[in-house]
Amino acid sequence: MIEGLASLTACVAFVLGGVHAYWVLGGRRGLMIAVPAKAAAGAGEEPLFRPTRTATAVVALLLAAMGIFVLQLGGIAEPWLPRWFYPIGGWLLAAVFALRAVGDFPVAGLF
Image (cartoon, rainbow, N blue to C red; front, side, top):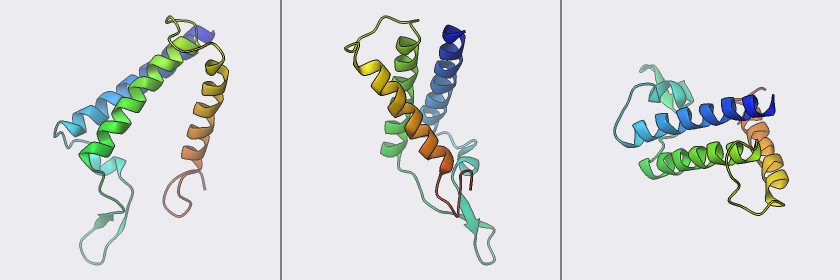
């Protein structure tokens, strides 16, 4: 059960990392959907921010690192880090995605 969840989570992280890498390399498909926007006077929607290639590359690398970490946490891959780090890292990862789900209140997230 744990291995299946870890594998699924890692696959999602790797796919999302790949999408970010695609954007870094110049791809545009799906980019406007991923960036929150607000209605602009007369011209449709205006993006709330414009992610740089550097920031997008950092996110791609972090997502790939997350995929590897989750595989190690689930016991699928050999651990590279000290054993004590995995429970702490797992909770930190959960906290990061919980905060990400809450989001920026008026723009995105659960509320």
